[in-house]
Image 1: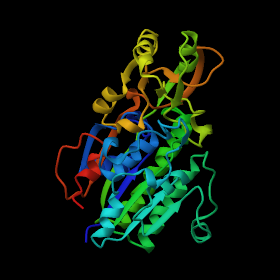
Image 2: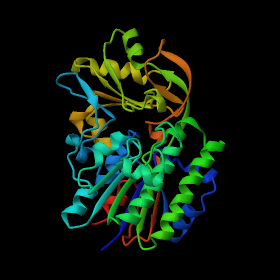
Image 3: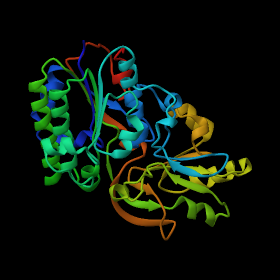
Image 4: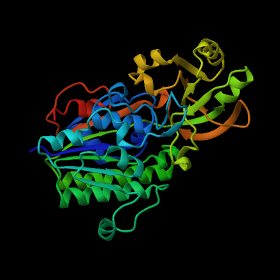
Length: 361
């Protein structure tokens, strides 16, 4: 029976691997394969984790944002329920052919979204007392330690349960708070690398597939799209695609938004206003966005707006304000590493979702 480990290191842009010494990640990249690939746009956690674990784009699996607005009612909710998924996960498919499975996440929200088909499921944010007793006290979700605790739990799970297929996903708090050259970034990445090395030594026959959901960029300009449109006499509902419960990570500031208008006759006028504003890189009508980025059309806004590399969208006191935040969401955070080790699969991996798409389970 194959033994498979899929790891998503949240926010792991290439610069983090370039700056920090990572002998174990370097080893598996050299002995296996390393590709500079692409994540899914919008470059946010839920969209990309589901793309990776299903091996499919959003037009198939249905997760198009961290936060969803019902186009018929205008009411919104977090896209955290597995009821939103329209495609089976690799854990479900593995279980259907008799393989044992496990899911480990740092964020509780991802555990709830992804654990269908998991024989064993653990969130480092809210772990069980038995695991705490074996590993040590749980760590704050807004810390680097949460991911190191998660990798210790992963090591323990592989030793005690030895599941055939494991999906493990971290959180990106450290990347939001620290640039790649800062000491805390080094400590975080080196800690993950060290624990991964121990896992590899204890599980030499396990296939390892490592990637990221997105990268991270420093942002200096904030644009309030709702205020901008209102200044032109256009009322709209503007939803930050990055929006989730973990506001301390990013203050719900991200490089992409959906604009809901409710009136089709306003689309062209709104498009013209947004396309003419400095800092807005691209604006796509719903159907065009769905086709270009493989999104599910009835789960996105009337317009899909992407910012320049230094731009975030959010609610501000003016149309444009200076900001200082590290975040993601735009096309500029979509470049990710794709690493395979001990893989039985061959092929040219181009996207993070290709890892599961080509597992043939």
